[in-house]
Amino acid sequence: MSLAVPPGPSRILLLGIAAVLTVVALSSTYVLTRGKPEDPAPRTERNYSNLPPDDFGGPVTLTPAPSSSVSPSASSTSSTKPSASPSTRPSDRSNRSGDRPSGQEPREGEPLSSPPPRGDSPGPRDTGVPPKKKLRVHRGDLVIRTPGEVVDGLEVHGRISVEAPNVTIRNTLVIVPTGSETAGISNNNGNGAGMLVSNVEVTAENAAPGVNGVVGHDFTLESSEIHHVTDQVHITGSNVTVRDNWLHDNYHFENDPYQDGGASHDDSIQIIGGSNITIADNRFDGAYNAGVQITQSIGDVSDVTIRDNLLGGGGCTVNIAEKSRGPIRGTVIRDNRFLSDQRVDGCAIIHPSSTKITHSGNVWDDTGRPVTLTRG
Image (cartoon, rainbow, N blue to C red; front, side, top):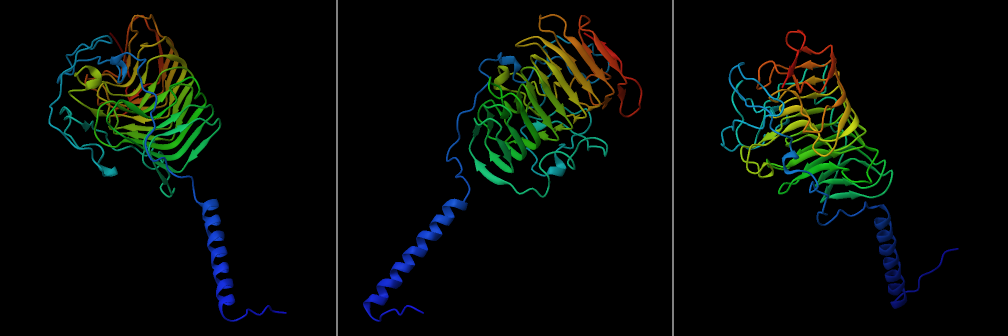
């Protein structure tokens, strides 16, 4: 049996009520299915106020020279400054190297040269965000305070600060804003232990000093690409694993405000304190100061293993300095291939004589000849 709708005003009233009910139902469905709103403005992230000023990028340790007659020193702080001609960051992924002739110094704000990755080392095919991954844009800083939170598939125009344990960040692009010293991803606090960063890309929004990639302690960084920043990885404490990553194209500046107006101290990885640190199966090059810079700026460093990497860049690629804290114990450097792109010819590894290095199987990538240690 059907219900007859009376003609006239009563019919119009019933139709109006039905239309209102339909609009309410559709609005409820939209509220339930739409994503969380993006933050309207950036939030403040923790900075490096507790670190010595000279350790945003690590100490400058070598004086570049055109000949192999230079005697490198692991404690030297002098640097020859490059040309101050400004340069804009390349936007094309295939032209990140800068294509500068061999031996030419970097220009202001220009990433250092990075040769194309080989097929057996990490590169664009197997690091960073997977090509078909769809990303949702998030504008502003993202502060994570929920234990075990998983961040997946974001394009963050801001910084990610992890302030809870066991957080995972994966398949995410982080474009770091400029204007102050900061990191794209940081757990540099007492609450963010157990952070996992996987298949992530971190880069700076513009060429600017003081912008770093991943900073902290008690984290794993894997299968990620970090480029066009000053330091790609800054390790401030213990229990860190950096594996299967592509770190390249550091920014270098002649006048860096975070170095009291001196040249940038850009490193692929800098370790300023902590133990139980593993750097394995990565490819990195393009840093002006060092590929791996180990200092003890905020605490003792021990039990560092650097293995099975393709390493390049820097005055000397691996540079170990004690900073008056005594020998660095338990340092193992093995089975690495070194590119021949150091500013000091033949200086793959430099260390103080008081710090003993266990090393084996380290060779030059272009010749296969064994790498020797340099003491300074």
